[in-house]
Image (cartoon, rainbow, N blue to C red; front, side):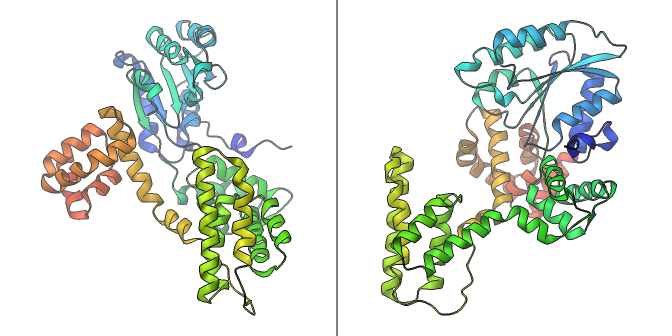
Length: 418
């Protein structure tokens, strides 16, 4: 099999790293000047997967002529192993003719539970005794288990890579690989990745196997095979009259049954119009949802067969008159609404994490108990709002979210710059 394109086109220097320019600059500054910051010998890079945390460390080390000693916390996760591998490397000079060494502890999210007892303490011990800068990476550094570790680290967020940036990278790779790809296809792949550049490159490589050109049809077939399966199930539910056939169809599909119930619920009104039919069908789907609730809350998995029967045959046999002709299936509005509010929810989550880290509460508690007061303060006093934003380390987009309108946001930004 050919070399993965994520490796083949991995940045080898800082100029090749895309996105998160500010974060990358802070990383380079830390590695250059870490001895000036001896109160904190470690840097914690955090953010969602595929946004360049690890490759940025390698690119920076290459530019600065530093040897990298890497350990994945998921693999080396107990006290003895961490101290034996990373601990010795952190106190010894490099054997290679380089200017220095950097210790990279990747994916510290892998530390968990009794199995990893002492892992966080071991990392803290390594940081305290290290003769070299240490960089850690995490997806979610706000887990309570990392509370003591965060005190020893400067923290730098890595945001998701913007869609246009991902699209541009994919275009460059496809050109180098000799694959013709339309701009709309590149944009679709970039959108599907949801800010994960590594995933987007993997998708591009998977689709390009043995091909010289990619079309939107290729992308649709690659990313929508489950949607096709959903349509097949819906056709059985709303067209078939044999209860056993309907139940077998929905039981054998690889589509998540909780997702399936939303699809069926959304499309009942497309196939039934008589009040009695609608009443019976919605009664069946609501009873299925009750059983799902009991499964979630009490782990009574024996009830799952009732869920399948009620949401499939129960709904289908509520129909007395079949609709003639083609009926278009509707995408669940509940999921559409989640998609529309994804950006807002992401910002609220980020705000909650910033508040939680400073006030030692959960991120949900930060949003619920602190955010309403911050919104009042931000509207009332831009000067105080600027000080609060600086203390919580809110990015511009988070400040704008809390401010609520552009005018208030501009006042706060003005105060921050003065």
